[in-house]
Amino acid sequence: MITPTYYLLHVASPEKSGRFYADLLGCEPVETSPTFVLFVLEGGIKIGLWSKATVEPASGGVPGALEIGFALKTPAEVDAFHERWLARGLSVFQAPTDMDFGRSMMVTDPDGHRIRFFAVTD
Image (cartoon, one colour):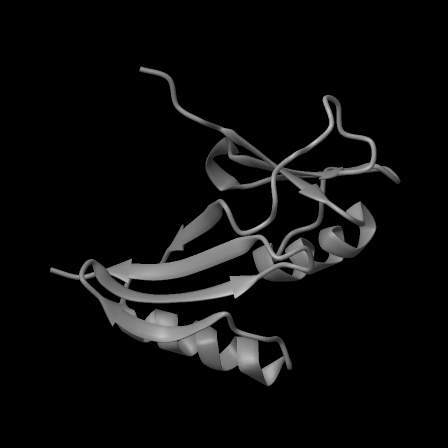
């Protein structure tokens, strides 16, 4: 079995998206250039933000066709994250909702990539 450890998002502005993700993740990137920004998270997962104008081969996808998911421990944490998100004046794509797997909410990054925060319930 192989395990994915690297997620690349094609973005309009790596600098703008880098600021967004630094704030969201609570850490600074380990690499920054005009065309690429890289974050290394606890556990070794990497999130790269690559300029869609320079990615090779050229990107044909559209934002929103893929989600990045962040598992939280409890439904209350999902609600608390939602309140902090709104307090910062950021938009929410889906407010906290009870779904068949648990509590979930979704936001989008500056390019429209979906970011889901959820807590699985029994």
